[in-house]
Length: 236
Image 1 (tube, rainbow, N blue to C red):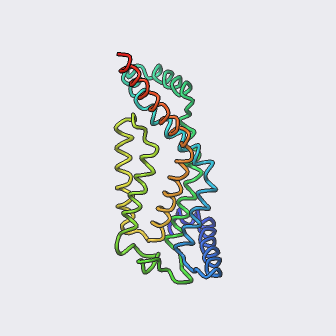
Image 2: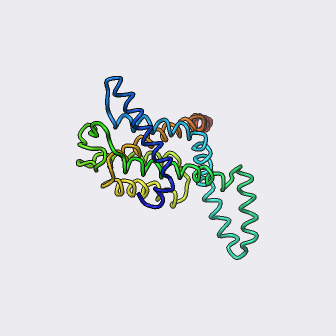
Image 3: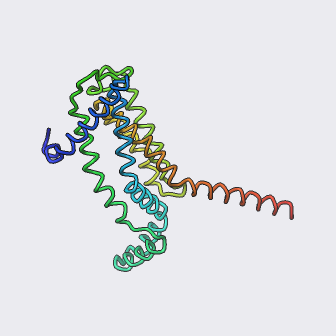
């Protein structure tokens, strides 16, 4: 284990113990499966981190929605950095967005993400490490199905928080990040990629739950706009 892994050693062992405990529970229930144990542990971690996820995602989405206005201010006050800073602060305040609000939750989650990475990378499986078509979760998926699924689920999660009116940079990231994740997952241990896929599924559900009211409002607004257009045409 490298330097960072050594620093996170207590958390790494905690996660490895958690996987083994869940595996033993499943084994007692007649379903000894390490893949299922990893999935269950991932769900538990994501549910525990949900309050932090809410703050991070809402802050990130708020900043993405402000990108066009921020770009306009940057172009307008590019020769006056001090005034630009003041106008940006006003923009954040009026939109109710704190650019630092998304950083703290991410900083809190980073040690956990790194620890689960080391825990699954260096996991020693006491029982059968196979999972469906994969001979061992400690090795890469021989059919490369999991890396492809990891890229697709990353894309779905990314596109959920990318506003339709967002800038080109946000949209480019929504495409580039899944490709990057799929590429690095190609040779990763299958257990680690399974964790990432499960995390994406749970993240997608959490984001849907967070923005469900906004989606309803958008549908209602679009329906009202259509009705208004129809009424105008009839009036003519």
